[in-house]
Amino acid sequence: MMVVFKPGLMDLVMDLGRSGFRAQGVPEGGAADAPSLVAANRLVGNPDDAAGLELCMWGPELSFPDGAFVALTGADMAANLEGVGLQPGRKHEIRPGGILKLGKTDLGIRTYLAVAGGIDVPRVLGSRSTFLPGGWGGWQGRALKAGDILPVGSSTANQVWECQPGFWKQPVSELRVMPGPQLNGFTDAALASFLDQMFVVHKDSNRVGIRLAGIALDYRRGEIASQPVLPGVIQVPPSGQPIILGWDGPVTGGYPVIAGVISADLPRLAQLAPGDSLRFRVVSHEEALKDWQ
Amino acid sequence: MTKMTVSRETISWRWVTDRGVRLATGKATLPVYHMLMEAGLPGVVELVPADGSLLVVLKPGTQAPSRLLDIINSQSFDMTPARPGREHEIGVVFDGLDLPDVADKLELSLPGLIEGLCKTQFVVKFLGFQPGFAYLEGLPQEWHIPRLETPRKSVPAGSVALGGAYCGIYPAQGPGGWRLIGRTDARLFNPVASSPALFQPGDSVRLVSA
Image (cartoon, rainbow over all chains, first blue to last red; front, side, top):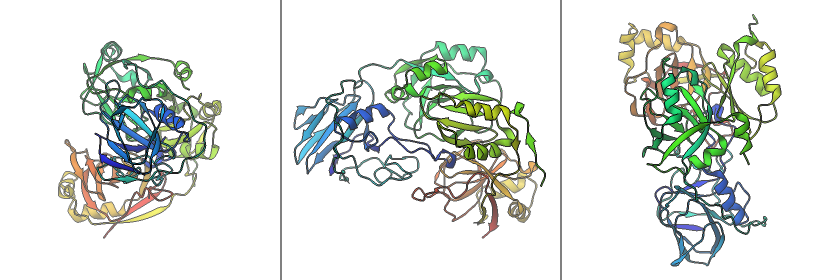
């Protein structure tokens, strides 16, 4: 089991999400930086889709009364175990009663903690991921609080990765996009500005949407009918300030879509911090697929 | 029953990120949705209908299946419902905050408005906004009413509301910009049920004064 001594900013139980329910209004959700969760799982010998914790910006203090094997990936959160720094991208043993303390992220904002055996909460709609907007899934449908005691499953003998050095080291300054369905409805000035300017990530950003601030983008054709959207879709509301839909975003949206961040770049989107600046680069579908691993 | 078809010229498509193909299906949205569901194309993860368009969600990292493009480019669609939807009767207490205002705007008496709503045969066009939130179509054109200029920060679960061409019921508490006309006890979304949303695209819904 895992006991929460002190929660972090937003500690959420996440696996790789749920598919097949968008037509009922339910997005996939799941780890925002999915490759990092998969890497953490492999380091401790879990299946790729085992549930771990997604931590954001500053982390919790956790104790493991029975001991545990853990691994951290994603953004480095300056973790320490009994005062000794804990290297990300490796498996570590925590002895019974050991306390794992996580600090703050420096580069990137999302850190993944896998525990051998996985966090054993019930699946809801096929997944153990927390769906915060609906208050269900994960651990009681919410972020962890002090005193929570989470069950950990028994470890399976999957192949274990030795080490995974690729944790978050690169600042993100560019996201690749494909043109969106309403691209042609934007003014020429808006299209030029969309590709030329650096946008700044607004502090009102979360797993539902990442708000950007910049020079307003003008859409010249009035209202549009609600259309289906996906994570990564860049909507432009009347304010002209774009919103990139996130992992828990709605399945339909009524604002024009100028472009969409490609799947291969969603994990990078997940690591953008408020105040970071970024620009967009248009790619073809072939190029978007090339980088998918 | 008359069979209606829509010609292939009417359906164009566009990418939505690299893993979604948005078909401009117009009035054929539900027939195309049902047809593609039956087709069970490889590489297609889900199908999401919306207002006049349909999203085909692909497995990440895959090309659009050529058969999908063949189907949408070569076929006419049968506009008669492919499968009969379920019929729902929803008990509603008509005491919404905006009910008098809606009646005023539509130049109807309160009993006239309520009677009209209860006589309307609604059809579930699509779900979205919140899990289980269904867009119910069927209001006469002259009853289409703009959304509130400033959305409410919180609308109680079970609120029955009108917005644009649609009637909707909020499955969970949350922000909302539609005009509230009543409330229901019906449970519209249950995440632990195998089919979590009560309403599915193509179902028909009637409101009953409770």
